[in-house]
Length: 235
Image (cartoon, rainbow, N blue to C red; front, side):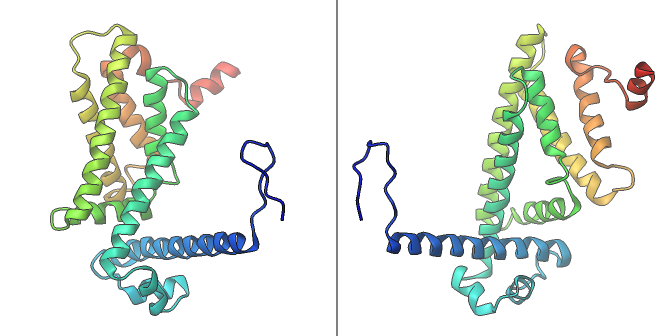
């Protein structure tokens, strides 16, 4: 096999052993992901304390021995599941913000869309998030993961609010306090969607957050045209 030097512009072909090793790693990661998704489904169906390793194995179509091979204990599986939720949420937010405009208002509005996207603000995932949050008092690993995410979110939103205040020429507004209120609204509306879904759906939740912001930043988050308004204008 010809091996080309680095920087030659010609990619080096993997050896058969390397290809097999990469294939095994991909298969292992796919199996871990399969077990994590089964755990998410199990928590959503049965509750945090009642989901068992055997339930996860059955949902994934695997043996208990396979689950124990990848995760030495239920706690290890739960920690990996929470890490997955955190990483997935952060990736989702990053991708949503990357598609938005560069202004602070556009970034904050995209954040609202990200937080109430169907893929992440659905009954299954909100149930599982609240299950983990409810355990943070007694499980330091959960507490640290959730606290780190909360701190990162608070810092990024404080920066966005500071930029919005500067760009809009607003005065006497504390960006950190507004960011904290914004974040608390998101959490509260997720809870409303979970316990009172007939009154609070994703669109109602988004409208509520924008109404809160409109009182502080009327130029950026003032009255948005409703669908029937737009139809009337087009007519």
